[in-house]
Length: 203
Image (tube, rainbow, N blue to C red):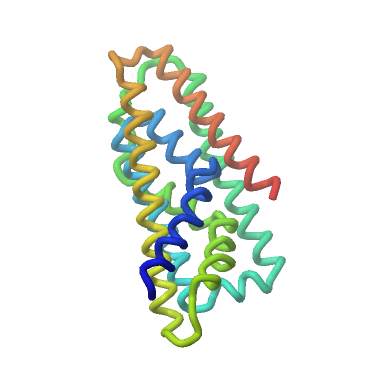
């Protein structure tokens, strides 16, 4: 593929990545409630979710999902339900007194939740399926082109969400965090996930 095509693709998808949505709000909530480590693990999980989407595109499975409104709706509402579940857990924790150290966030939880948040986000898959073909040519291997373009998308996601995680964690770690602050932080994180679920439900 030509370098200019790759640059144009990157310039096209970057504004989409920078637009607040379920993935960005999830990563922000993790960094807010669990610090940089949780935010970075959430970022890695989101990127892994999009790697799976990349495989779907390369194999043509996204076309099957796009052709099945029932399957699309089921996937969308499953994603909404999962985000609401995470939000409820955070809000319940915020209502309980007693400090919980940020380091207590399970190492694999943010990674797993990030993966599911991205994987269960049908809009992400549909953007993949709708935009990638516009930058592919018929005289080259379609699967290889899809993998290359997807790698650019995933790399940009990783970069943007890493910067977001470090920025939010840095702001949240000035001084220690009291129980009151912890409850406010977890309540805010839960609220962010409710907003993310609303974005998905409103589509």
